[in-house]
Image 1 (cartoon, rainbow, N blue to C red):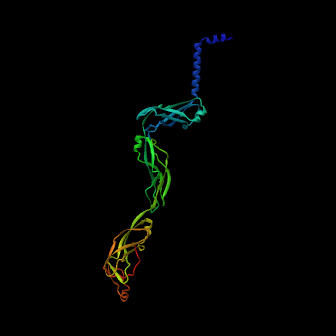
Image 2 (image 1 turned 120 degrees about the vertical axis):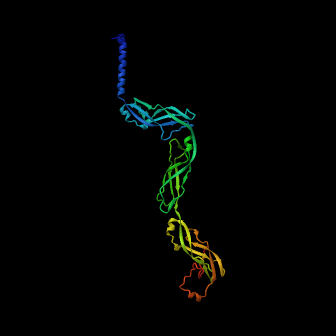
Image 3 (image 1 turned 30 degrees about the horizontal axis):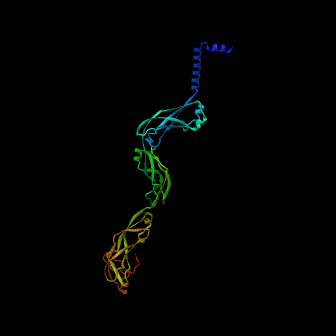
Amino acid sequence: MNIKQLLARLSENWPAKAVCFILAGAIYFFHQMSLLETKTFTVPLEVNSDGLMITALSVESKKYIRIKVRGEREDLSSISDMDFKAYTNISGKDEEGIYEFPVYAELSERIIRMNIDPLEISVQPEFVKLPIQKKAYKAVPVVATVTGKPAYGYKAVHEKCEPGYFMISGPASVVEEITGIPTAIVDVDGAKKTVVKTVSLVNMTSAVKIEDRDSVKVTVPVVKEGMVKDFSLVQVEYVNVPEGLAVTGDVTAIDISIEGSVLDLERLKASSIKVYADCSSVTGEGQYVVPVRVDVSSLFSVVYKSREELNVTVVIKESQGTENNMEGHDDSAGENGSQVTLQKGPEVS
């Protein structure tokens, strides 16, 4: 059969042959399509911008896109949601408002190198409405999140953050409402000394970005807890009385209040506190007003004395014989102003 005869046969009933060819192709196509499977992935929507405008989405309203992939079962089994990125671009807008933007899907380099065929990709929804605003910047203070209770007798005082401020950026309406950036938890439970930790910052909304860095050094000073303890009727001792003189006073005991740490004050006993009436100013017989001094450890300070001064009467000391007759009697001066005979006591500042 020569070429002319072949062409003649092919041209015979060509409309019917054409229809059969198209039907055969369609059957093959639908058969091949019936062998493909569909898999759906959900990925967050990324919003690209030129930096002048920004979306005002919060964590709760963040958009997610469904990406449908159609292909052979073996190929789909090697694909995950990490192989896709859904994005849109808002750079074309320069005015605040709500606009509709097209959504695009992008494959990872790994899937592109696999050269999978067939592979059909579609996104749902194809368009999204987004509120956009001008991008704003603001410096806000860092707020340390301190939890726990120091050991008994200790307390945590005002913490310090380094750096103390961070720059944030985001939609103007959101940025304006942020007054501070909290840190991750700094635990001081049971601490007996200053706690220093480097912790991350806690971004409360994805609509705002923390610029430069996301960690901070937090110092929480832990010191001994202070308190005031009262001591009642502490006996007064007359000191620095000139030789040959004796003193009688109107008061023999006073009340005092001592300030110090809880742990130190718990160990302080009244017998360790000395109260003196300083008679350094006495020069002879007569009436005097003398200051009251309290001698206590340098760990403490005196915050209250029921008497700052005492009224005393100074007389010439009795003779030695008289003193011997007085043995067995109380040498302190009572409320009735009885005479007191004392040796010169220690110098008290």
